[in-house]
Each structure stands twice: as C-alpha cells, then as structure tokens.
Amino acid sequence: MLSLAEMLVLDIMMPGIDGVTVLKRLRSNGITTPALFLTAKTEIYQKIEGLDAGADDYIPKPFSTGELLARVRAMLRRKDNFTPDILTFGGLTLNCSTYELLYNERLQNLSGREFQIMEMLMQSPKMIVTAEQLITHIWGWDTSVDTSVIWVHISNIPKKLESLSSPVIIKFIRNAGYALEVKI
Image (cartoon, rainbow, N blue to C red; front, side, top):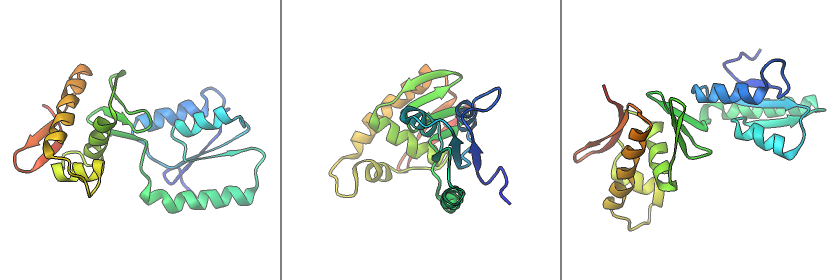
C-alpha cells in the first residue's frame, strides 16, 4: 500500500482548490514527493502547466490501469534520485524551472550562470563548495576558465539576495570556497 509520503496522485479538477495550485504550494514549501496528474484535462497547454507546476508525470483520462501502475512503479524507482524543481534554504526558494529566487513573495531573476551557482549551493547548504567544483559543474572538465570568473558571477548574487531582504548569504571561506548561510 502506498502512503502519501511515497508519491502523490492529483487531479487538476478537484473541488475547492485545483490540483495545479495544490502542487505549486507543496513545491514552494519544499515538498519533493514525486507527483503524477491523472486528469481529464488533455490539451497540450494543460499538460505543460501541470508539469511546470512540479508534476513528474501526467496521464490523461481515460487511462489504462496497467499503464498507470507501470508509471507509478517507474516514479517510485526514481524516487531516491529525484531532483526537485524547487530548492529552499532559510526561507529562500530557488525555482529551477524559471531561474527565480523567491523570498517573502518577492521575486528576483537570475542569469544562467548565477542560477547554476545558486543551484549548486542550495543543493548543499552550509557545506563548502570549492571554486573548482563550481567551474567543473558549470563549464565542464576541459575548460580553461579561471577562478576569477566564478568570483565575477558570485559577486552579483548577494545584491539580488539583498534586494529580496533575504537572510541567506554566500559566505566566502578563504582557501576553501563558498557556502550558503543564514545571517543571524
């Protein structure tokens, strides 16, 4: 028997609040449980909306029970390797689909490189990430990019965090790297 903690099956057309809104709220609160939409909404834009809201799969009605069960099994196999579209730390949210930072209902857009840096830092908050790890993650193993390039991209992020009034900061640890922390 599956429990709610293992996965979610939602319908878009639920009484009261729709399934897309429910899933967006769950994702914004850091809930990363795999989710599947099982719904009569079959238009392409509706599927896109559901997947962009954080669903891992979308099955239109009518559906085959065998296919539904196969997709559920596949989602549960991937559950331990699931990478959420929403990362949170210290009340700050990073939407990996839109490259937006959110804090107290205030949004700030990130450039592609800024996003890649924040994504890596938010995946391991409070842990030191070296400049070399960032370079390898962003530019690859065979790059000639210098660590000063990382500093240039990182230097823009604190301004954006400050504009959100976020308590999250990027701390530079001399001869080690960078870590996300919450200022006290």
